[in-house]
Amino acid sequence: MLRLIRAPLVFALLLAVALAAMLYGTGGQPSVAAPSAAAPAIEVGIAPTGRNSMEFVGIVDQDGLNFSYYGYVTHLYGITNTLLFANPLQQDETTARFTFHGAANMTGRSIISNVFNLNAAGTITFYFDPLPGADFDDPSSFIRGTAVATATTRFHNVLTVIAPDTGLASGVAELEQIATQPVELLGQSVQLGRNTLQQRFTYTGFGVRLEPATPRAVIIIAADGQVTGASTFLPQVLDGPASR
Image 1 (cartoon, rainbow, N blue to C red):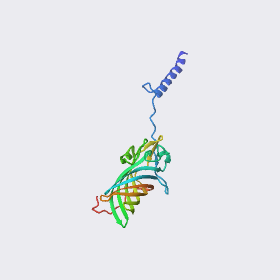
Image 2: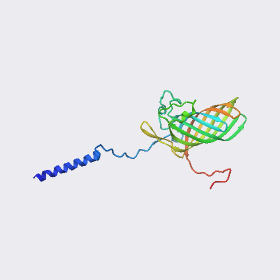
Image 3: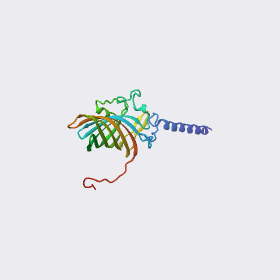
Image 4: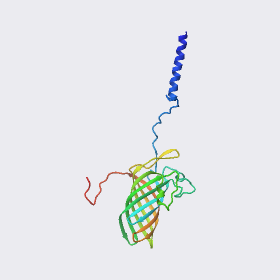
């Protein structure tokens, strides 16, 4: 009889030990299950055909053959506009969570009458800063935070002179994304665009020439962009021997 009673007790004791090992492990502390694979980041800034993927405002500084540009995002497909700013009631560079900064070199320049036709090529990088505070008086302030996307750029800019040292700018920027880095927004992983994504931005603005000899100028712009596809390899006609 005693043996029959012991058998259930021993079984219950072994079961309790096994459960304790599962819950607490061997170190006496509750064990944490290995996290499951992270959910994929939510892609933003990739709008369907006919809708803007991104809108932004900024400044372009010209110094001879060199251009630098910086500003902030005012619309990003997939994110509520108010979330783009730390203070939705004050939507400017000081509260913008997504900013950009880039540089390009002039590749072509033609002038006919009072119309200047310019081409340039370079790169642009977008940044996310949960604690924004950019200042147009300090272009480097637009580089704060995490670099979330980088793209190569090609610009076609048309400047129409309307008065001495004053002109109206319009143009197109072709972007091809080459890098991306997800960030956390409201507890969710968010990714701006994706690698090889191509977009076409159109912009308008107002320009002032500061110094004619170099020349030096500043242009204030507003832009909107749409997705045009993904990169594909196409042969090009080169001005020298093709590399093999």
